[in-house]
Image 1: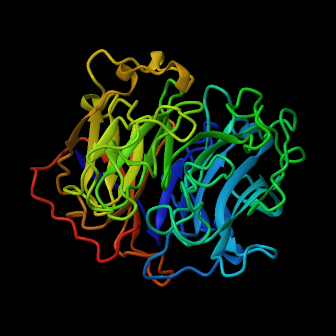
Image 2 (image 1 turned 135 degrees about the horizontal axis):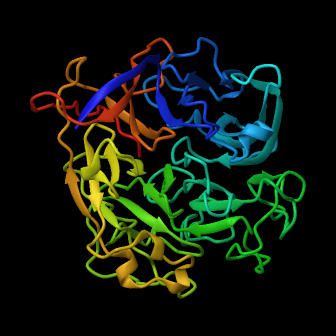
Length: 448
């Protein structure tokens, strides 16, 4: 394949999405706090669509996992103008002393007088989540195409091994169902009905449940008063990238600890293993780099641990950047493949097992079979030189347009340094030049 430059001048572009309104506009999320529009003619609109720079925690320009992490545009955007954003704010009043920041999930409305601008006074904060460490924030929120609910991935709180300040000592946050860290949440932003259980008195998060959103009645834990009803699935370390395929199946790319990177097909009520496992491997809290030969095959409630469908070591890269299942027409050889990459710029694709059918994937962990989560076949993609020359950059995210064609978002620097504008949006296209060896830099600091 090759890469075709679409737009440049960003700092740290993390995500690209569309409004699904037929305008052809592309919305580019920049970690420093802005969302920009590339209009239907391919022109970058000068003024930001959304700007939360004055609401962000101060970012470390050399490297940071905080910032404006994603947006999700409501499926009914053409009629209601609703946009949801997930970003890192300064630590809120009342949060635990010495903690790092507070992540916000907020709703905004488009300015009625300008469809290319959000009314920044319209913010409604749905969730505030205090963070003990700056890392493992989760990231890309998204609406489920089948159910219309909003899915929100949250990291385990940060640090290594899901341990330390702000982490459940015995089992870690990701396995602790009394906390929302290390989980994927599912909420109903169109209704306030359903289970509206308030967070426990000592919770390190606040919610608008019952006033700003509801909880789907078929969420897996709504009948258990000790478990936050928003939880859809659990056992994640830093599920920073989620996406849905054309059939509505949920893919979660979860950054590993020291050895393995993974992508899971996530279904309702599933336990995806962290910190009992890193990928398909046993994990030792006292020795991150030496997996034990044996470990528990079930969680603390006796539930089976679900393995990933894509797993890799660090031969291609040290941190996974989640992508999309390709459903476009420009790259027919990649049809049905999950296209993703690594922070150092390497791109890859994974093909499902022969006979695997996306339309047959179970809607609940109770119905999973080993065949449903069999390992996919992973291949590195050979990216030729582009018309603009070789790409030598850090990969930060992926996106797709209204025609389901894929885009890669890259930057030339390792952090959200607002004094730089090396970020660029590339369209993934068929190779049109002679393939060459394209060496990517080894990062000097790595997201953990």
